Length: 236
Image 1 (cartoon, helix red, strand yellow):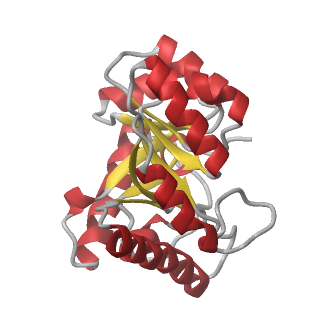
Image 2 (spheres, one colour):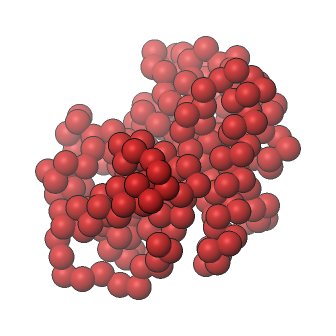
């Protein structure tokens, strides 16, 4: 099941999208899950609006962007039918733009950012869905809450009147082996289960898995997989 993408064929975006959807469904069935329980976020960072339109025409609705300004530009250029997810690191000074542009923010990684987003969402009259980003592997170069900081963040999220905390996000270590990938993704699921039981919250969403490892993430409970290269090709 584990695959690392080595290159792209000359197939169209629509064809590659269909292949990814088939792989998602197969991975879900192999894990004894309903394929409908896993949603694809097509990571459209650095690709042009026309490529997103091609994916949209093929039935893809949810798109993920890493940078706030690129997200805002694509929101302005593309139809309202797109569902936009901010999946990259969010600086405090760009929180308002993010709230205006994204219906999902996957990368809430501090109490300060959480409180700022809540205030801005109230001012903007919206209620974005958020995920708390957790640095499960403890890598110094990665953003995210340390696992021991998660209970305080969940408590703070519960107190936010203008944010809908849906669960958690993580990124596995680059080029980790299968055992490490399973451990990372299982660790986030176990943390989610513990927090849901402790605070009586559903926390249904787990955003984990990318082009090279999303099938393992699905085996460990991912509900949102962030796939870009396998759909749009390699980016530099």
